[in-house]
Image (cartoon, rainbow, N blue to C red; front, top):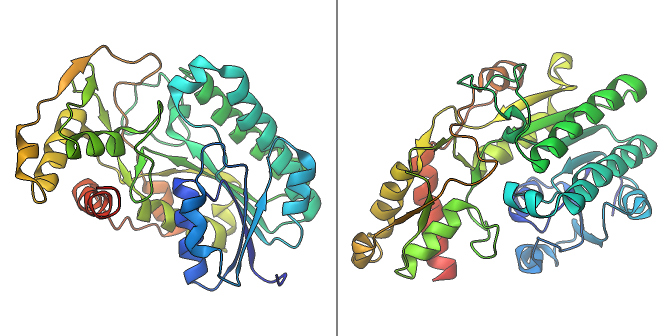
Length: 325
């Protein structure tokens, strides 16, 4: 693999990572993936394995030697590897911390030593914690509400120190409820959109936590890919060594989400319109409302979201129907 324009995507076999692989391979970048397949899937990257510009390094970010080996000759890092999910972090805070903090620090050290051009990493809207402010703006956060949120905030603190102490260019992208093709609908910690979609397709009743009036800034995968590219390639010196909301700037309640899913799924199966939803208790660690300001990304990176919630959902539903039905 040539040393020119090599991108290392950690967690590249995951939902977001594999979409980044697909996009940057289409742009003729050389892409290397570091993944231990703890949450990612080989089938997500199978289509790339015969591409001469693609390389898989199977390893663990908790192992510094794996990080060092994977970073040889790398120009840019898109760090997606993490243990997501607020409930998982509440059930197992130690493993979440090991991966999200110790693994993150390993990647920073290895990136510094490899003299990479820029380190772009997946941050999280969970960093806003108990802040009541809406919309969320990058410089106003609250106290974290889960171990997961703590780990993602610590990532931002470490990245800032590495920028100041070692001159490593870093940009954090605070993802807001990302959804789209390849997002796994299975498992105990599946995200709400793929989970609900599959349940409707199987004529099963989705369970909404609470009354359904909690709202989220659901963000389609193509918007997230755009933000990673902008963060990786920007030459605006004011745009680096900071964090950005990665979102649309609009919010949707869970009840509205259910209606949209039914609307799009009944185009394939009219029986889905009859499937009822049930309501359970609110989930520990969940924030009631999430809405991002994307003004900073627009002004400093030139971000232009291409998909609002309904456009993204329609594409996601089509993908699930065609690939998982």
